[in-house]
Length: 403
Ligand code: 92P
Image 1 (tube, rainbow, N blue to C red):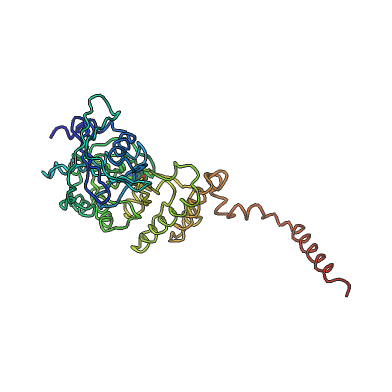
Image 2 (cartoon, rainbow, N blue to C red):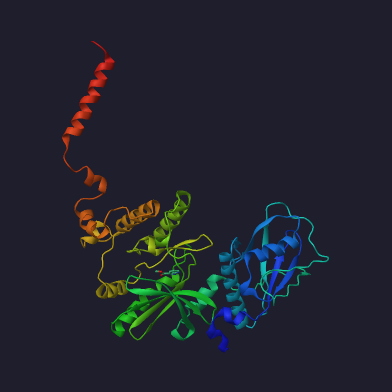
C-alpha cells in the first residue's frame, strides 16, 4: 500500500465520495461526489436545499467515532469533517471493511417538508469533472464494528507506536525543550501531535522515562490530552498525543467572558483530575491549553515523568512568566503553584495581554513585592488615608447636627 505514504488527500482525490444526507424522521438520500476534497460548504447546502426544499438549512452535522454530533457551518469545518471521514475510510480499508458513506444530518431552521424523490437533479460548483447523482436509499444501521476511541487508544497503546509508522507533517510549535509536529499515523489513519525532545541520556534513564510515562495510558479524562504512546530513537524521545485542530489558547485574541468561563471550568476540571492522581501540572500556561472545533478544551504538556522533567531541565534553562513565586525562588512546588499559574493564565486570556508590564523584569518583583496593586500603593502615603478619615468624620458630624 504505497499510496499511504502520500497521505490521505492525494490517495482520496480520485475516489468517489458518497454523502448520505439523512432526512429527519425518514430515510436518506445518497449523493455521489467525484471530487470530494474540493467540495465546498455551499455546495453541500445547495444539495440539501434540493433534497429538503421546504426547510431553510444553514448547517449540517456529522457523527464522530463516539456518535457525538459535530456541526459544520463553514469551509474550514467542512475540511475538518472530510479529513476525519477520510481517516475513517482508511481505517475501514486497513481492516478490510466496506467503506461507509459519509453521513450528514441537515440542521433546519424551519421544519423540513416532503423530500424530493422524483426528478431530483443536482448541479454543484465543485468542478467540471463532478457528476452528482443523488439516489434514495434506506438508511442503514450504523456500523457496529466501528471502533470507539477508547478501543483505538488501547490498540495504539499496545506498543505499536514507532517511527516507521509516522509521517511528520507541519510543525505545530516549539517550547519546553521540544518541537511538536502534526503527524499522520499510517496503520490507524489517525492524525497525531508528536512532541520530539532531544535528550542525551543513558539507556537506563530512557527506560525509567518510558515506565513513568505509562501512567498516561491510564489517564482518562476528557479534559486531558489523549496519549497514544512514546518511543526513543537514538537521542530523542517522541511522545504521541491527540491532535487538537484549534491549537493552543496563546494565539487567540482576547476571549469573551461567556467563552472563557467555559474554558476555565474545563481547565479546572483537568487540573483537579491530575491532582487526584497526585500529578502536578508544573507548566500551566495558555500554550498548554488546547481547543478543538468540537469545543473541547484539554490540558497538555504536564509533568508526569519526574525523570523526563529533570532531563529537560538540564538541557533547557528557562523560567517563565507564569511561574509562582515559590517556584522562581526554588522552593517547594505544590498544587498552589499550579493555581498561581492558572490565575495568571486566565488574567491574560481575559485581558488579551499579559497582566504584568514586562514579564522577565517583573519576575523578581513578583517574588519580592507581589501584585501590581500592592506595588502601586506600597508608598506609605498616610496622607491619603488621613484625608479620607477626616472627611468621613466631618461628614458624620455634620449629619448628626448640633448636640
Ligand atoms: C497543537 C495541536 N494539537 C498542539 N496536541 C498536543 C499538542 C498540540 C496538539 C502539544 O503537545 O502541544 C504542546
